[in-house]
Length: 509
Image (cartoon, rainbow, N blue to C red; front, side, top):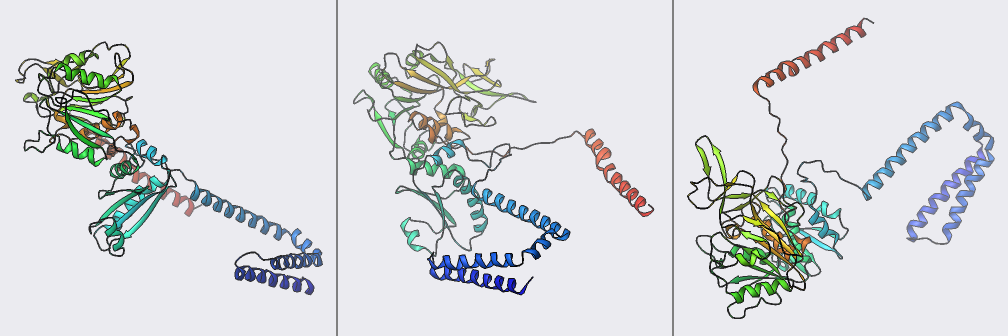
């Protein structure tokens, strides 16, 4: 390379350095930068022109061509890796191969997140020095990352309780180990148990603009809302609905035989005394104007609603359904629990339930479905399996009818003579909603899904806990011995023999 070309390249390098320094000091683009940029480009071009014969010979050398090929290959690989990482950081897809889909948000959670129109602030309060705090933080980050993948409106923030007493006091955070606050459009909800079910439940509360009203009918011996010692009350049901931002009120048809006009859902749980004709007419008028009714009735009670239900194609049988188990000691019946194991896969209320999950009733009655009137559709929600039997008496001595039996039904469509579509849920038992049974298995979720659907909030149905699928591999004793002798023992011997043979061949080749 000639001396002139070296001088030009040195001044070109100085121009590039000046360009960078001026750009940094100015904090932006200034017109003088064009001079430094143009000068550096001109000096480089001049150096290449002066020694053009040298560079031509250098580029045509065999070693240069091979070096440039290797350099181009390395540059291509680097550019490819950078591009893949850039695209992967901005847009990525995860695959959940677990049997129970435990690493994927439920469709209900996804629907809620995608419906956000403004930022959802999630604040994780923690306390340094608490046992397991880092592990809990990592688990929470993994959970919220699933929500962040669905919407850019999810904003996560971490707050140490002792370092931000202003926020601790503002949101009334107890100085425990952890708490999570969700804030959306000025509405807040605080949770302490951290999983998808609780986070999405809190999301339901902060995204709902208006509280729906649920009315509990009284005056016919229905389960009371006050706590009772024997668990035969619906105090937990009332608290659960209020915790999900429903307004719960009780009322009686004795004063005014009409369902309140602002009732989004009416519940009749466990009536034991007869309804008057004027009260039954009030229920019919409520359904005619598009009402939503949940009716849970125990067998053999003189409530007088069988004719009302028969008019819709539902006939309570007044029997007692029990799960029968065949044991070495003979047939066994547990009168405390009757499982509802088969759910409608097309109904929004029960479609989230897994095939291995079940609801718990206490000696419910069978709901026989007959021909419904025109415009009314019947959908069996919950059924028992074929191990259940129906008995006419509680001594269980006679041979009962074999299942399956229908324990829950949805009637929907246009009530005869009505002006708007109605929804009616009928269950052949009321004990599954009392304080003793409400939190057994899927009973809680069945209630919340039913109320959400009837309140026209199908996207707010409860999130059922996900189960980790277990793959079992069991071998009888004979097959296990064959597995040991035919695979576990010979495999190391075969590999050892092959390695010795290969060593021998290479050693004496």
